[in-house]
Amino acid sequence: RTMIERDPAARAEMLSAWSSSRTLLLDMRDADAFHARRLAGAVNLPRTTMSGRLHELPPRSRPLAVVLDPAPVACADEDAWYRAQLAWFTADFKGNPWTLRGCVVGDDALFDDAAARSGFPVATGAVIPTARGRLWEPSDNVARWLPEVEARMAHRWGRGGRLLEGAARDGGASSEPSSSAASEPDNDDDDDDDDDATRPLCVDLGCGAGRDAVYAALRGWRVLALDSDAKGLARCAALAEAHGVGNRVAPVRVDLERTDPADVFATIGSTTSWASLVKRADERASAVDWASLVHGASNDGASNAPPPDVAPNVSKNPVRAVLAVRFLQRRLALALPSLLPAGAAVMWFHFMRGAELTAVGRPNKAKDLLEDGELGRAFGAERGWTVVSDGATKLPDGRPVSEFVAVRDGSCESF
Image (tube, one colour):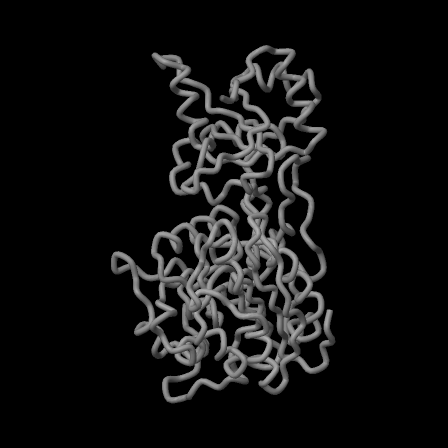
């Protein structure tokens, strides 16, 4: 049972402890109250929006402090009001609770008394989306390898256009003194150029709720996020909007199990047949028009795509990186070496043989497990690819996950 601290002196001590330990801080008040004033570094997820946003919380093992939305004056049962908010952190669909460091009510006394006593800074004013902190994290493999590959391939990806923000700066400080995860580089200076076609394009296969896609977009990428699950794609689009990179992320519904890999990547280089691959929920288009994202668009919306009678060419393919995290479509994975152009990179992180032997026991079918060296052999057999990493890491639950990275650049040595 999580106790709500109400004693003024104890609340001040709690804030001091949160500040010194840089505890992640979630504020569940409504957006207007949050922008009016907040504990500096807090991230806002209003209590009324929590359904469907648990993917925006930190890993369950990371300590989290919570500022609760105050009960209204007319509330007949304050305890029930606060229990309902805390119930979000008791367990997710896997039955695992989050690690709460403590919670306080976000009333006037918190800011006027406890914050003043503890010296915890209070921020005011609207939060710029691109400078918004985040509680969620990308996958460990992506957080490790995407910056590494950016730095090593900058000579390729920077030709004819800007370098990635992330290639020069790995993360960046928030605009507020913060106990929460650091913001990504502040791209506000580039707002007018967000649809600049010189930004490299990343394809996130099986993107799910989009944390890795948004992480890449915050680092300066344009991201084509592909998945067959409409609910996950909607969450991906919402997360991108919340962080101010909605115009860099295009969630597109496509069944990668049933679609020929050559068709997927040929269509990225041509607008003529994409409609046949996309399943649109409720007859609506994707959150961002894929054609303008991939090719860039002029002010009048005209696409720079090749005319219908021009066959897609691998050398003209705009993709510079492919991500796959806990996703496996074997036919697609093994086809990638011949589908991507020089200067491309592939990062594939999925469960390997042996996961079925752990206590979790899943996945347990051969079609859902990578074999040792399987991807390395496929990429090593295709001219121009350098296999940078072909190992494995283990999740905390003991399941092995591939750590496969390859680049199509003969001048790039192993990292």
